[in-house]
Image (cartoon, rainbow, N blue to C red; front, side, top):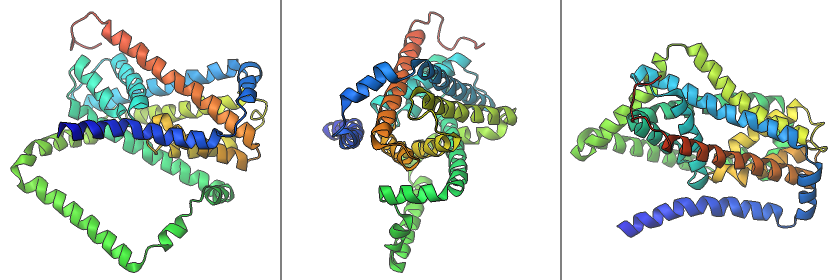
Length: 334
């Protein structure tokens, strides 16, 4: 049993790296890295690149501040900086185990501020739902605005939703629907009837309480501001890098927002910080807007590598600060 758990944990760590590494190898197998090194060391404007990193920091800081706001209706008042440190650490941990960040940041607040793990996890779920809805809305608007470009993108990447759905017969739809209904009913009955599920029900109630906490947020306009600030920072973190290279500095806002949205959606694939899928998706969009293949893959590799390097630096910084803290845990906040 323990060996099975160990194998599963190992696969959870190894598979994302293999997937991301495989995509990167395929993309860069014929790349002239000498030319890329020349661009990195002598042609790139490091001033703009360092400036872009500022917004990588502010995006995570705003996320930490917004997170604290969702915890207040639950009568949990962690230190603001602890919330920010928890977010820094969560992004760093996700580089090792994709999607582990949500758990690690809840663990940080549990340890240093006494916030119940499941309560904070519920608020994280709330955040993710809101962020996903926002990205979907922006993506829908951008797709409608640049529909011809996205049509070319789907053709180039071999992704055609019409062909996928066309492969489903009427029987296929019916069977799929029945399977979904049976799954939902089974889970519902299990949660209601079996005594060994009691702890899980309690856990889910805590998560539900966290999710519903948004209704109790005192200043919803401030919450909306933080949400816009988070994604505005992410966008500037990316867009400013266009100024770093001669071959991208003339690209306009349209190219930036389209490639940003496509890149944001591509990180759904569980690889470390989207490595591989992000490179492929953004490279494809940039080529569709006129960049050469060489310039596009140079841009995505350099930008992603440097911006990813910021993540562990922030995580290490927060880990050191928290571990050097001398005051007792759960001391009155603020």
